Length: 191
Image (cartoon, rainbow, N blue to C red; front, side, top):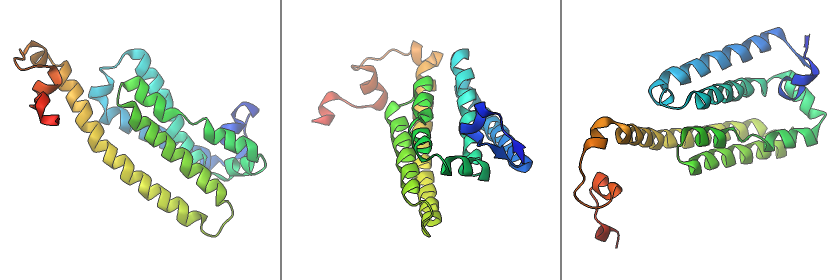
């Protein structure tokens, strides 16, 4: 076991196995790289400051996913129940990501709320025989929500990229507001 410096106890616990630290670093590196390659076109259109903060948030989230599964982190928080609840409550990364990317903030709030509810739910099921079933169920529903939003976000990002393209900005709209002209709607179609 490796003793973790006190500064990192809230993230990694007091001790970790070398293989677990390797998995944390490996998963954080691979998944962050994948995310930044996959969303490169969109991310490169953001200010450099936003890109750097998003990179750090992505490393934090992906590394935290694995770190939270380790014995060392679980052991640390099993002795500090109040600290665990505070640690759960301060996970606002989804909201920050949506703020930094100008994506619909309500989606970030939904993802944040779902994450917090599941974490508190798992805390209630601590040491219960059904905790693993609840965790698996929560993960599955979370993935459904995430993939559902992925379609919505892909459409939104595509819309943003189209709106910022030169062709769009040089087009002349003859029929009313921009949103009505883009979606082919008229004001009377809503009433």
